Image (cartoon, rainbow, N blue to C red; front, side, top):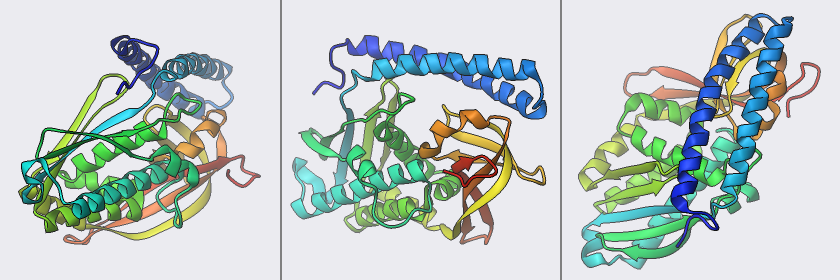
Amino acid sequence: MNLWEQIDPEEAEARMRGLQRRLADLDDALKAAQYIRAQNPESFSAELSLDSLTHMQRRLEEERIQLVQFRTRERLEVALSGSSFRDHTASVGELGFFLIRLQKLFTSIAQAITTGPTRRGPFSQEVVSSTALRFADVFPSSFGMEIFVRPRFDVFGESTASSSLQTLFSLLIATKHENEISRLSGELGPRAVGHLRHVLDDLARSNSGFSLKWTDMSGTQFAWSADNDQIYSLRQTVSKFRTRRSTLITIPAVLLGASLLRDRFELYDVNRALIEGKLARDVKPHLREYFGRQCSATLDKVEIDETVTGDVRTFYTLVGIAPLDKPPN
């Protein structure tokens, strides 16, 4: 099943790699220009430099939007191993249960990166539609599957599906690194990490392992695997971190800078204390007009407990921004 239509896949990936390199170079330049603008709010030259770089960034984003129109689906390869998946067969009940768990994990990640980690209640219909996984085929393995999801692209030429897949791999890789799983627990929130814990618990109970593979639009390959012995230690790592508190706060601030490519932000509060963290996808279209300016910022503040040491770490996600005299969007 083709991932690109009406374009040669190698050409499309090469063009995407070129766009990403130029966007990354621009992102570094914009970070410096945003900082200069914040330190010199009345400077005409600082404003002109930032506007020029922003215009160049928009043009590259428009090129990316034109290119991604030819990307029709993302393919995820999933392989299960262990005694429950011998001879290339699987228990219908166990397989169905695993796939439901995987779908919930994927959708909860998408919800967290779109609106922030604190949101409770049902998933939004837009997120559910953008992350609907479809079983397509099996391949030789203990039990291997091809699963597809159709991307829906936004004004930046990005999709919830591909961003969520990239975050899924980051989360799985982080299970082997305690500092990273602590940060992602704060940025994704208790629901996403809870679904990851359920996936690992179910695999441990059936003495199974699994692996994932995905190739993004630039041809970059992502891969992760854990056998049944490793699953037990990953469960222990994830269980060390619990959400102590998750709250929304709104503060007056100066947006020192933000990366629309890496989804990160930096701002000063009224005491000029630096707050940095992750951008929710919903807030990204509203950011450019606030670079280096005063604003009212709504932050998702999450405190994570390290249950063994008792340490508490705090993480922030920017979920809303508005002029000081208006409520954040």
